[in-house]
Amino acid sequence: MREAKPTTRTTTPKRFHLSSVRELHTGVGSARDAGASVNYTRAPAWIQFEPDGDAVVAVAGGCPVARWDVRGNTVDVAALARETRAESSSSRDAASPSSLLVSIREDTRGKRQGHAVSLNETNGTNGHTPFVSRALVLGFHSAREAREARATLCARSSAAKKDFDTFANGRTTRDDDDAPKRKSTAVTAEDDLFTRKIDIGSAERYFSYYASLAEQQNMLQDRVRTGTYFTAILEHRAAFEGAIVMDVGAGSGVLSCFAALAGARRVYAVEASDMADHCARLVASDARLRDVVKVIKGRVESEATRREILEDLSKGVSKSQLTDSRVFDVLVSEPMGTMLLNERMIESFLIARDVFLKPRGGAMFPRAARMHCAPYEDAALRDEIENKAAFWTCASAKDFYGIDVSVLGDAARKAVFAQPVVDAFDPAILLAPPATFEFDFSRKKKQTLMTSELSAAETSIEETRSASGAFALAAEHLESLRLEADFVMHRGGAVHGVAWWFDVEFDVRRPGGEPGPHRRFLTTAPGAPTTHWFQIRAPIRDEYGVLERVEKNTRLSVATTMAAGSDQSYAVTSRLEVLKAPFKGSTPGTRREPNAALGSWNLKDPYYRQLHWPQPGYTQAQTERWYGDETT
Ligand code: SAH
Image 1 (cartoon, protein in one colour):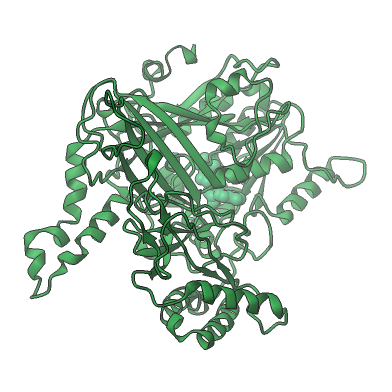
Image 2: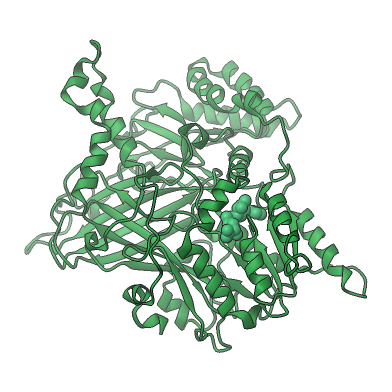
C-alpha cells in the first residue's frame, strides 16, 4: 500500500500533543549539526535547532508547529518555564493548566549569551563545538486547556505572549473549528495503542483515503505486489490449510480471499475504513469465501475488535467464551509504506501479533522486511530540485514587483531539499553496494532482548541469523530508529544523497530457524520491476561541497535517524561523513576540514516525481539479480 500524496494542508497536524512527553533529548552537537537533529521523545513531538542556532522549532508529526526566534531574545525562557512549572505543580485544581508542559534543557559547555540559543564557534577538540542550547516547548492536551494555559502564561509574561499566541492560535485553538463533526467508525475516541500515538485528524484522512475503491484499485493493480502475495500465499498452502488467519488491514479483502483459497478454515478480515463494507459484499458474493471470511470493521488495536473476534471464535467452541485471543495460526498483512515504515502500519501488524498470534508456531506473513540504502549520484535530479527554488534564488527575485524576495531563498532551498523524492531510478547511479537493515516480524523465540536504546535496525541480518533466538521486534522500536551504515565507494563521484528501498520476505521457517523451501521476496529495488512504492531518495544540499568529489574506495558513513510522528509518518535525518585518512603528521586537536553534510526530510511530504509505472512481468532472473543465491 502507499498513501497518496497529501496536500500541504493535510500534513499539518491539528493538534500538538506533548502531553506524554517524558524526556526531551537535545542531543550533543545538535545545533552544531546544522538543524539535522531530531530530538526524539516517546510522544511524537520534538524540538530542533535551525542551522545557525538562531531559532528553535517545535515539531509535531514531522511538521514545524512553532518557531522561536531566539536571536537577541528578550524573553527569559528559563524564568517562564520555572513559573509555569511551579504553577502547574502547585495547584492541581481543574482551573490550572495541569497539562501544560514546559521543558528546558541547557547544555552549559559553551558560553552563555543571555537567554538565546547561541553557538560558540570556538574550536573544540575531538570535532565537537561547544555550544549552549536551550529550548522551550509548550504542550497541552486540549483546546480548553490550551486556552487556560495561554491565559496563565499571558498574564505572566507579556513578552512571551507573541510567541505563544503564534503557537496556540496557529494550532490548538484551531482544533475547535476544524474538529470533525462526524464520528468516523475508524477513529473512535477509544483509548488504545493506536489512538494514543496517532493524531485523530491524521487517522481520519488516512482511513478515508483507504475507503476509496480507486485507491484500493491502485494497489490491486500493482502486479508485482498483488502477484507476489498471491504466489507466496498459495506456495505456503501448508501453513494456511485448516488455519485460523487474520488479514490485518484487509482493504478490499484480497489477501483474505487468497488465504481462503489456500485452504484457511476461518479468516478474519480486519479493516478500519469504510472499505470494510465493500469487502463484506465481495466476500458474500462468492460461495467459496462467504463461510470462511468474516469481515470485522474496526481497528486491529481496538478492544472492541478483539471482543468481536473472540465472540465469533467462541461460537464453534462448546466450552464457555474464549478469553485468550492468541489463537491465530497466520497473520497476513500488507502494511508497507514508502521507505517501508511510512504510515506506521507495521506497528499495527506487530501489535496484532502480540494480541492474536499463537504463542507457539504462529506465522507472520510477511515474516520480515529489509530496508536497503546506498549513496547515489544524480546531477540532473539535484539541478531539478534546485530549480524548484529558483523563483526565490534567481537574479530577478531581487526585484519582484519592487520587493526583494530573495531573502527567502535559503528557506525555499531548504524546503525543496526536505522533500524525499519518490520515483524509480537506474541502479547504475548507486555509488556503493547497499547497506541492509532487517526487521524480523516473527515472534521472539529465546531471549536476545533488545533494549529500547538499541534500535531494531542496528541488528544486522547476519546478527539476526546467527543469534541464538531471533529478537522480538516490538511496535515501540519503530518509534525511533538509528540506522548506521558504512559504505565503500565502488566508483568515484558526487554524492547527491541517499537512496532507499525495501523488500519483504515470505517464509515459514523450519524448526531450526533455517529458511523454508518456499521463501520468496517482494522487492521494490531499483532495477527490479517497478512497484507503486517506487524507490525513495533523500537529496542532500551539501552546502559546503563536502560530497562533490568522493574518490573510489573512500569510506562514507551514513547515520540516519527516523523519528515517528503522530501524523503516521517520520522525520528523517542523515549525516553523511567522508572518512578521510588523517594527514601524515597531523596532531590531535588540529582543526580538520569539514567532512560531513547533513540533511533532514519529512517523509509525510514527498515529491512524487513519477506517477505511473511500467508493469513488466516479474521474472526469476530479476529476483536473482538482486538476491543472488538467497532465493535458491
Ligand atoms: N490488504 C489490502 C489492503 C492493504 S492497504 C491489500 O493488500 O490490498 C492497508 C489497509 O489497512 C487499508 O485499507 C487501511 O485502511 C487498513 N488499516 C491500516 N491500519 C489499520 C488498523 N490499525 N486497523 C485496521 N485496518 C487498518
